[in-house]
Amino acid sequence: MEIKQLKSFIAVVDYGNFTKAAEKTYTSQPTISTHIKALEEELGVSLISRDTKNIEVTRKGKELYDCALNILELEGRLIRRWNDENNKIIHLGVSTIPSTYILPEILKGYSKLYPDVHFVISQGDSSTVAEGLESRIYDLGLLGMDCNGDKLKCDPFYADEMVLITPVTPEFQLLQRQENPYSELFKYPVIFREQGSGSQKSAEAVVNALGLDIRELNITARINDQETIKNLVEAGLGISIVSRLAVAERIADGKLLAFELPKESASRLFYIAVNKASVKSEVVKSLMKYIKKTYYHPV
Image (cartoon, rainbow, N blue to C red; front, side):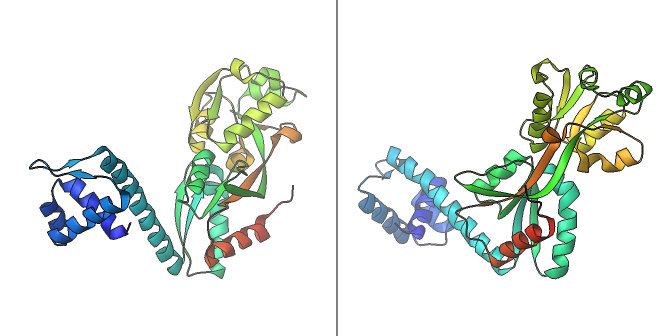
């Protein structure tokens, strides 16, 4: 089974006849016919019924068609990846907090050392980044949850902590002076991140550690944008638990109040992750080495 044979077969199915397939692939019709016949002989099945004026794809042919599309997609992905390696391009998948607050600093420092390396960066929640690494869309991932498993290797590289934020109002300023204000705080509407977010998993861990049932909270919204959450809290529409990295500036400017949370539950890590089965290019290895050397925080 050869790639050129699969391309001919896909063309015949897509265009509905041999003549059109030959025109679109700039191949002769006898060559197209030879490729289809060779596939049928090798597989021992009929792929295309030629009994009528228009061709008809058999059940086995439809199965091969789906497989052939996947094979060609993988071939294209492999070629693109090799071209990217030659051109020194790194595909990064980055979750929200690292993308906004850590990655710019990383790229600024790394690019001074390797100015000829370029990046294709995709942002999503931590679950989406992990899925992209598993399917090898990304060379490297920075995310807010531990994704170690059969397919991914995940190492901590940056330490942060969660903090509870509220509007700056007299009632919350009064609560800030209390020793244990959490039961009162969580009577207010709560704004959380989306379920696949690493920040949300950390927030839920904090709620559980405080002995509260998350199902009993008045969760008024789940939002995938960190800036929107900060804006809503600042406007007085609720409270939230977020990464300190994301709100440090607004807290310093007096736009939000911060309530410290128990260290054992509030501490969180960001991770650098790769697919175990992927072959890492030299530029990917250099970026991993730079991140771990510059930012690594041992657990």
